[in-house]
Structure formats: structure tokens, C-alpha cells
Amino acid sequence: MNRFMKTIDRISVLITAYKNADLVKRCVDSLRAAFGGTLPETVIVDDAAGDAATAELAASYAADGVKFAVMPQNGGFAGANNFGWPLCTKEFPVLVNSDIVFHEEPFTAMLAFMDSHPNAGIIQGTLLIKNGQDGVDGTLNGCGAFLTKLGTTTTPGWLAPADDPVAKNARKCFAAYGAMFMIRRAVVESTGRLFYDFFHTYYEEVDFCHRAWLRGWEVWYVPTPPVDHAHGATMSKFYTREDVLRKFYRNMRFSFATCFGTRGRLMIRPVFELGCFVQSLLQLLKGNGMAWRAHRWAKKELKKLKPQIAETRHHVQSTRVMSDTALFKIICKKYTLRELWQAIRQNT
Image (cartoon, rainbow, N blue to C red):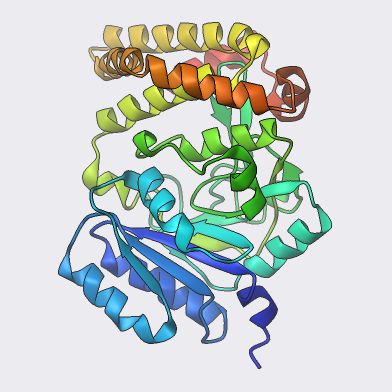
């Protein structure tokens, strides 16, 4: 009997594909090798690419019991994972980017942590940059994220050496990185949903983690056998930098408006907007209007979403069990004014 069967029987692996059959094949083959030749329940969602290569790939894994679903229209990371979620039948689904490569399986360590921490709802394992757009190969892809007074997130271990002590210890964090994170099924049941479809791509996992915290679940970084992540290898093919910023700023503001209570809106939102204004102004002075245009687009889009914001906010706030004050004590990284200014400058 395969020595990994206890783990295989408890997890579902959900991978989304969009014109990247080569990456999906590499990911699935490495997953099978890491499990000694046997795949756990695996779901591949074709995000409406409709390309022959992805269909052929799905057919090649039919004998392994891999489930294959085709989106009716492109839904990005958020929509594709929502579409594939009902096909995941195990207790602990794991969202895995197609640009992940496994060497040793990390899930046994993640399950052991889940079993010993019943309030842990979402877990991120150890990720290393590999053939990506940022950083040197083999450096850490970050070990969880913390919230800052700017409303942005800061990531311990980002681009640090793989053997940095920051990667060796488990820690509670504001959000897990969506490239590979494990979700206790009960979290989605209690929050009412995984992602918002219209988020499409960017900030969906941060918003989900925030909602999980508000419902009393914990989010953790847990050290595991590392996996390689080709950071930015997929999105850089299809989205310009301005496309990314537009969706990112819109989705952040939607999340702030729906997840924060009164204290969060008073403490975070004004500083965030000030930071955005200063960032945009500094870029304009350098002759770059991209951030300014992205913020204007995001604010116009939010006006169209006012009814949805009101409905979502009512649901989130009426079901939350943790206050902003209690949450900030756990996941908010404190910055001095100098550090805040440095954070703004680094993004200009």
C-alpha cells in the first residue's frame, strides 16, 4: 500500500488552467511523483481557454481519475476555483497554481497541523521562487502576510534565502498566499462562499482569509517541504501591469468596504487612500500616470457595485464573531511614520 494513502484520502487538489497545458502537466506529474506514483483527488478547471492542448492533457489523466471541468466563460483565478470547488469532495481541498512544482509532498505536514490546531482554517506551506518574474531562484516566496496601517500587506521572508529562520516556524498571519493553500471545508461553509466571481484575479485570497478570521477561523503559515513556484509566469502572459493594478485596487477597496467594521474603516481606509494619492502623485511627477488611471478606474467600478457592497457588507458584518480590535492585535504589523513613507516610496 502507498505510504501516502492517509494523506491522499483526505485532500483534493484543485488546479486551474488557461492556455498553459505545459505548466499544468508539469505540476500534475510532479504531484504524482511526490506521492509515489499515485494522485490524490485532482480537479483541473479549463478557464474557458478551450485549447486542444488542455483537453488532450485532461484526456491523458482520465485513467488516474482526474476530474476535468470547462468554464463557460473566463473567470480568472477566482471564478475558476469557485467553479471547481464543488468537484472537490475531500475534507481538505488545496488550491494549487499551475506553475507549482512539487519535489516532496507538503500536505502531510499541513494536515498534521490542521489536526492539532482545530481553529486553523487556512494554511500556506513553504514556497520558493523558481523561474519567476521576481527575485532569485530558490529564495522564499513569502511566509504568510500581515496587514499594515496602509491597508497593504507585508510578507515576512519575501525573497529571503530558503534557509532563513523566518521559514522554520509556524505563525498566524492575516492572509495565506493563494499559490498553494489548504482550506478546511468548514471554512467555506461558515463564510458562505470561497471567492467573489467578479474579483476575477488579484486579492481574492486575502479577502477570503479576512472573512475567515471574522468568522473565528485562524490563518497560518506552516513550514513544509518546499515547492517551487514560478511567480508571475502565467499572469505576465495575459495581463499588463495596468490591468493588474486596476483589478487589485478595485478588489482591495471592495474588501475594505465589506470586511472592516467601523474601527477598521476609520483606521485603515483614510491612510490607504492618502497613500494611494501620494503614490499616484509621485508617479505623475515622474511622467507615469498608470497608477493614477488605475485608481480612477477602480473608483468608478466601485460606484457600479454599491448595491452589491451594501448587501455583502450586511452579510459579513451580521455574521462576524471577531472585532477589528481583536483581529488587529493578531495580524496587524505596526509601522512608524518613517516606515510608512518608505512603503509608499517603494511602490512608486
